[in-house]
Image 1 (spheres, rainbow, N blue to C red):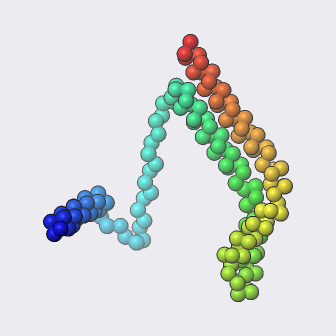
Image 2 (tube, helix red, strand yellow):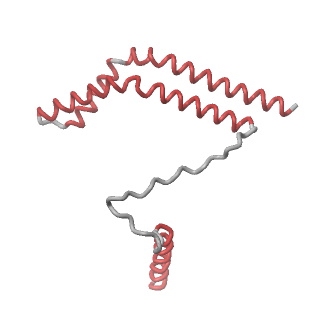
Image 3 (tube, rainbow, N blue to C red):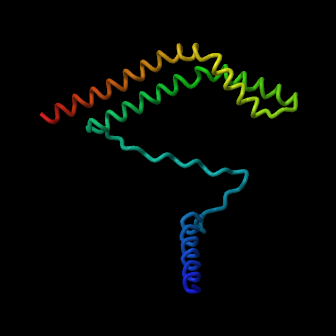
Length: 149
């Protein structure tokens, strides 16, 4: 029993030491001052050569279509909902009620009240996204069919 406790403690100490060694700053690096922020890390470079694999091309096209859809639909309801949420939070603060609960209730009520308008405005971006996804899939199917013949 004592040996297993000692062994567990030693293993834990070794794991913590290894983790600390991986995250600790090198001793030669100058310390960052509060007035001078560390530069942001650069994003890892993606492969510059375009792939010829039909599946990879299809996934890239689908990703682009989904990103465009998200960018187009994000602001559709945001202005109306945000305004109602801020108003409800201000009213709740003055009334001495929970502002987060008021915000959540206002969000739900505003979304229910604007559902028909929201769905009508979403038809265009949804159709565009669906067409782009279908085109990417059809292109992949044609490329894989041509490669197999």
